[in-house]
Image (cartoon, rainbow, N blue to C red):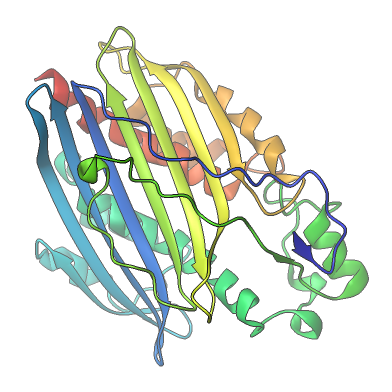
Length: 325
């Protein structure tokens, strides 16, 4: 459902639950909560690496981040677990354009870039970006406050100049409000280790959950997904974005093949067209993906949020090492 619009063909089929873990495999799960504060915004999240063997699950690494931003999305304070003094050097920066480059400069070694902490810091700018949907849901922005002249059209499939959202802004002067489905439980019955511990999301907040997993075989089997949700003032949670990705991975070269993206929940009827961009990952090493996506995945054949899932496939390198060494 899209408030005030006659929208059709919207995707609203959230993943029933996370696929079961198969030994040997390695899974990285993460989440970031976007919580409004009197100061501006708090971004709080955690990540965990879990290796599954015939004997059970073993935690191979974990991290947590709490970042407070002002109303202009500048970083006011940041705490990490385990503590890392390099994160303090990011304070004062805009958590937007250029922030990821600053994180790359601060965490420069291959070991740093493979860590759960790096993933969380790298995710902060996109979390700050999508937190704006909470203001849309609450009515803080929208209607006459929306100005089509300020919208950068054609940056992705959902923001195309002839699409539902931009046309509504241009012709009606309002930002449509997408109302997605109720989320399913991503923790399979009988497998509490499927995800790291995540507290309930408070009202007026948003959350991004992410999972990347590699399972042994020849080729290795890859599964990845992300889900964005929002909790309204009454405590009801709905899904805004969700995608899954499957692929094959050569265990020697770490080159991807058979990459497929499946839209599960998307706000606009134009969004699913971006799924075809997954095939552009075929033939690339996983350690190339962050630079590849940043440089080449742009325009109406892509999705900003799906691109971030593609970038997270770079984590397949360290995850593969966990099950092959």
